[in-house]
Image (tube, one colour):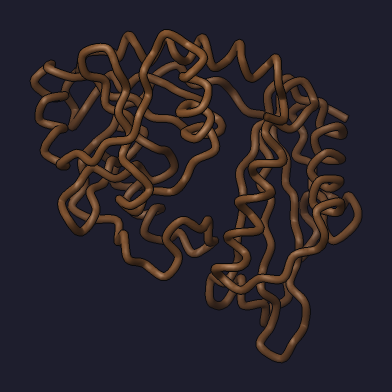
Length: 278
């Protein structure tokens, strides 16, 4: 199989990429009642699979989606990763709620090749993250708000939108956590801000205790981004596929690259190759 091919696993077996897989009455389709995880593949192995599956289980409990056992979930992800054979790839694992009359949902794993990202540009957007949302902390498939904010960012020539919460605090980006670089440390909003508990974010907080670097949680006003625009602070984002990358542009203006973030990225990349399922 070509390493550029899309690999699809659905409810127990590999299927051609164009195979219909969702019933018309599935609430994952009609109401957005579903959960998902995005995972990285490194040399044919899924990275941090245990942590991602733990979060998927939590999301499913919040949203109300039935999942098969962990052996099925793990086996499906590993089969797609092995079949794809990517040196660097992306898996999307999705589970839907099924129909209101009791028909089961679908479990779907889609794998594609991915590429490393070295830097990003972000913009501020007028929409906020609701830290009191019913699905806060869960990766639900109802992501229209994120998609519209991301589209606005692309239209502005950026890669990501950085958002506040309803209290006017720095929260997160549409598909990544955010970190502020000031002095000799990296600060990331706490989970109480309403941000998603990213797997990379959690590992950065844990692994930094082994390094000569401070990465810690801190509540910050959204207006702290003015310091980034003025060159008094740096900014970085973290996610499963990006790992940790510096922000080099804010609202269309060049910003100071977060040099500490680049150093931490190198430490992180080395550490994750030593332990692919931390």
